[in-house]
Amino acid sequence: MRSILTSVVALAVAAPAFASDLVINFDDLNPAPKAAFEAAVEAFKAENPDINVTVNINDREAHKTAIRNFLTADAPDVTSWYPGNRMAPFTDTGLFQGVDDVWDENGLRETFASIEATMTRDGVTYGVPYSYYQWGIYYRKDIFDKLGLEEFETWDDMLAGCAQMKEVGVTPFTIGTKFLWTAAGVFDYINLRTNGYDVHNGLTGGEIAYTDPRIVATFDNWEQLINECGFVDNHASMSWQDALTPFVNGDAGMYVMGNFAVSAMKDAGLSNDQIDYMPFPSINPDVARAEEAPADAFFIPTNATNVENAKKFLAFVARADVQSAWNDTIGQLPPNSEATVSDDKFIQEGFATVSSAAGLAQFYDRDAPAAMASEGMKGFQEFMLDTSKKMEVLERLDGVQAEVY
Image (cartoon, rainbow, N blue to C red):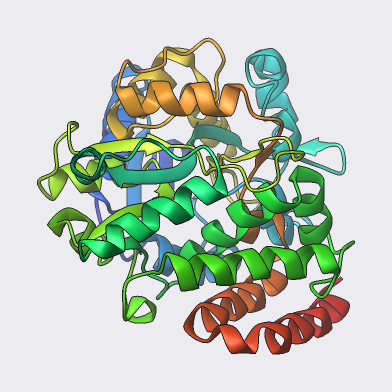
């Protein structure tokens, strides 16, 4: 990986290369995340002029494909990846090293208390999170205003609003399921609102079958959403970025998505006045509201060459001032409790949403083991394309679950 560089942040300085190099792999080429990462690296370099920093920046899908290879063949010193069960294949096989010393020496147990559990496995803490973000429904406020629609509090409110949109030729939901995880976001929210946080964890933990009546009820509600609201055509051939086009054009009114999409919406020409955010509405009033709030983090591979410098970088990334600036740039929330939250309206709404939630789910493909998540998301997309396959999909996923767990 060191021989093929997407971006070289610094070249050699006086210190010996074998002692002072720091190689970081980062997984987001989108403009705002890339800019925030590069700004943080520049600030780190300014404080540590004796460390040569080299970065490799790739897109997320390519990073997901390549990570196991580069962790074993030519490991960087630091790599971005995800907390929760998604880090388990690398922690459990000894490809990520624990960093309890970084947490203890920098007081992170206190300032990262709300997220420590998802960074810990079998009593060992791995990595440092630099950002997390709310999911929910982003909607075209100008379309809602034109139709006299308010933010939806309940499932029935949303179904009625969908009917109004369809009457004027607006498809209620856009989505791009080419890379599958967007469908998982919709599934997670319908499941969280149908059954609650504990059932989400029970399913992703392998304790609840996919043919369990509670999960069947989730799919029944999803089928109703597909039939009575609807998603844009050809979504299986579109990435999440492709799916922005009908939203930006006003052909679709809503997008179940994470807050990272806001910058892309604005880059495509929409203003704050045209976009707004609401939590996914209630389905079962007896179910406490939990939210999707995935985190992003940096880890140190076990095969890293310069562990000392890698730990310096993780400690730097954990600082409140660094997290404040980073998340202000990307429009997300800093995990460090002492960091400043942006006054951006989406960040403020998201902070209010996650702060009052009954639980924070990482995301289906992070909370479930990778093998289960892969097959599960294929099933979700298949169901969205043909709802008549509901039980066929669920029964197949039961079989996968029996093998994976």
